[in-house]
Image (cartoon, rainbow, N blue to C red; front, top):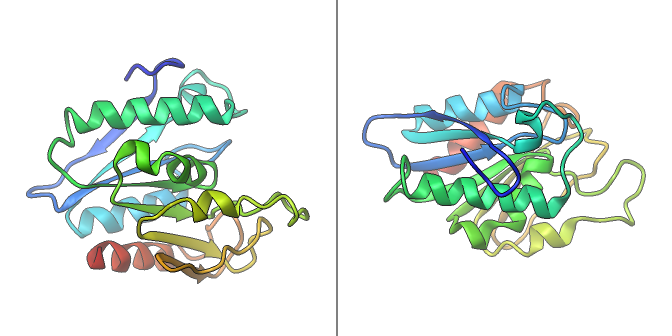
Length: 193
């Protein structure tokens, strides 16, 4: 799928009679097969949601270092615009992702017309630098938000908010320790949404 910063790759998982669509992005150096993304994908499919996993153009090009935030956001918005006009036409869309992908979804929630944001391992601050908070990115989202965070995440623990639910699961930033808990938290939130 073309974007202003090169082609992105989108993996769409369909369901019969979808309740909505969940579009997820990967972390900075990872891919769409991260255990937490797979757990959330499977939970959402079980709940009757179409799931689209998006690989940013820098990853499609084979680079591990992420593009600047403005490029990530522009590519994400282009992908969502395309999906809304094609595979996801007429569906309510929840956006989200893990780590860097969660930040992109938060920054672009209004521009993409999302009805909610699902954040996996939101990097509240760089490890050991709580003064460099990214909390404003979460606070700028005025939609229902679910944050699933490892209890030992070195990137910090986001606070709950008026429309923001934070679920702690066993583990660290990778969220590999308890995929079942990650999937269960996503399933419960999506079912209530």
